[in-house]
Each structure stands twice: as structure tokens, then as C-alpha cells.
Image 1 (tube, rainbow, N blue to C red):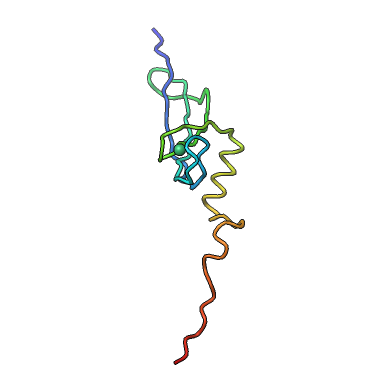
Image 2 (tube, rainbow, N blue to C red; image 1 turned 90 degrees about the horizontal axis):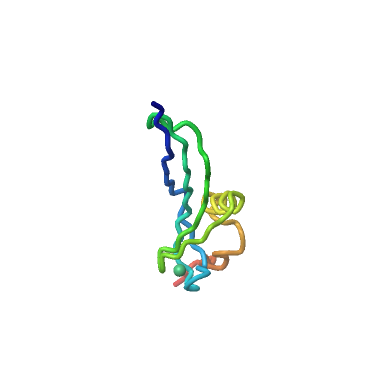
Length: 98
Ligand SMILES: [Zn+2]
């Protein structure tokens, strides 16, 4: 008798601040990877499907993203975002003179 099936795994890859498409808030989003693996005798052998999604922590809306988008989002999260975001938040301090 051969016992086989599938098992789902959920990985949290990153947390990003994105403007939610559902509620419109610039809220924290979790980037998740859902992997379904084929199992034989309860031993996971190989992934059957890999899906990525972001979830808004504000309203809970889940947004499916492609593997490419997920990679880009992850790169953003790790790199700290070298784009225009955050520019102007640090003003050069004038030396205080009394
Ligand atoms: Zn939302």
C-alpha cells in the first residue's frame, strides 16, 4: 500500500510597507510564499506548486503576486529601498551656535 498526498507549507519572506489596493492605507504587508509539496509515506518529496501573496495587516486583504514580483518586493525589503522614498526625512543639521 502506497500512501501519498500533499502538504502545504507557509513561509513569511518579508514585511513591507505598501499602499493597500483594498483599503488604500500605507500599511505593513507580509510577503508570503505558499508551497505545496507532494508527499510519499508522509515524506515531502518535491514541490507541486509555489504561490506568492502579500497580505495587508490593516484590513487583511490578500493579494496574489507572481514569483517575479515577490522577488522584487523581497529585494526592496532587504535593500532598504534606494528609491525616492524617505528622501528629505533627514535634514542636515545646522551647527548650533550660541
Ligand atoms: Zn488593506
